[in-house]
Each structure stands twice: as C-alpha cells, then as structure tokens.
Length: 273
Image 1 (cartoon, rainbow, N blue to C red):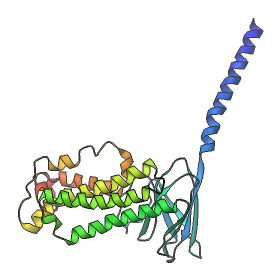
Image 2 (image 1 turned 90 degrees about the horizontal axis):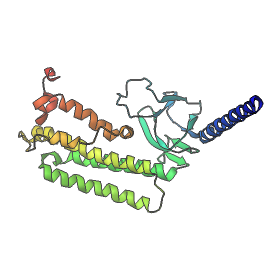
Image 3 (image 1 turned 180 degrees about the vertical axis):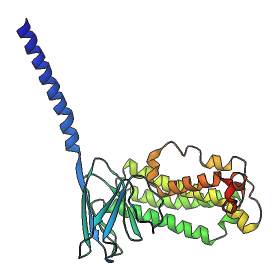
Image 4 (image 1 turned 90 degrees about the vertical axis):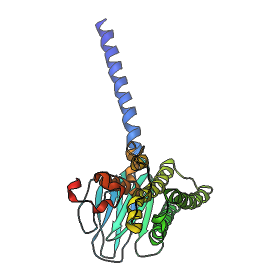
C-alpha cells in the first residue's frame, strides 16, 4: 500500500510540474519585442526619449525621466535604434528636443521615425500611425480655428453645435480610413477619447473666456462643470490621451477656485486654494 501511495504521490507531483510548465511557457512565448529606430538631424540632445504609460504634463525645459521613460542613445551619424519587450499593442511617445510623435505599437512591429523628413513614420503599422498623426493634425487645426475666431463669444448652444460639426469632420476622416484598414479596438477607443475631451476642454474654458472677451457672465447651470466631468474618472486607460489629461488638469484647477470658476478663474486670488 505504501509503495502504491508513493507512486501516486510521484505521479501527482509530475502532473503538477507539467501543468506549471504548461502555464509558464505560453506566457514566455507571448513576450516578443518591437523595434523603434530612426534618424535625427540635430545632434543635440544626444538621446531620444521613448515614453510609455500615462501622459505627463512637464514643461519642455525640465529634463527629467519619469516612470516608463527610456533614453535611447543617438549615434554620431544621427541614427538610433531600440528593442523593447511588448506583450500587447499600446500607445507610446517618442521625442527629440521639442519634436514629439505619438505611436501605436504592436508586438513584432518595426517602426522607423525620421525626425529629418516630412514623412516621419514608416515601417510596420505605417498606415495606422500615419492616420494617428493625421487625426492629431485635425485636432490642432480645429484648435487654431477656435482660438482665432469669435468662438468663445457664442452661447453654449452655439458652441456645442460648432464642436459637434468639427467632431463630425474628424470622425468622417476616420471612418473613411477604417473602411480600408483594420483598426484595433484600443486604437478606436483612444482616438475617440482624444476628440471627445478636446471638445470638453473647450467647453470647460468657455465661461471664463466668454467673460474675458465680452465682460459678461455666460448663462450656464450651476452644475455645468460637474456635468462635463461626469464619467471621467473611472477609466485609467484614458491617461494615454493628451486631451484627457489636459481636461483633468484644467478641471482640477478650475474647481479649486470656488465661485470664481463661473468667471475668469485664472485671475482668482491665490487664497482660493
């Protein structure tokens, strides 16, 4: 009986070992790499910053590394190359000096970023990343239009109509691309977050800029700002969106001003905090 029991124990331990191996090896096999390489024209700085994770709002003159940042050495000929482990597609940022490009990178990708030319991105996922760059260009064009017009002097209803129209241009451009390309779910969610919170950011600033430009208070409801921020604090994956992070920053600053938030809140006394 003891001999039979020992055999059963050995078989059980062997089975456990095999199960453990079966769990370990698939995960190891999934951990592949991606490659980012390219060229810069300006020899300074001698590194390219590769960033992952949440967007961090840091003044460009502050030279520091945050969690998720890696410095890539630039060779004497201006070239650079970086391999890194990656288990799922995600958003990253690559910057050299004042130039920055946002990237959507998947396992196995090899992407070339040339800061010297007009065509910045090439290689694997070129179409998807080029589309991401074009969508950002639309947001920047909208921002310039808004800041150079009488946009903020309009009523809340008129501002909402204008923003809806600008969003539609953005989505029409995206849908045209999506008809001929595979768009990953994470990519789709991110680009929708970008335009949604860019519009919310404009609406957040509307009462203050309206008063600054017209000298009058904008007619809004007491819960105007809280309504804009509804459902904005429960999805940490949105932190890869610059527009979302900018919205959070301005919302927190605005709310810290108390009743000044209904006017030119940035002129509130320091005692508001």
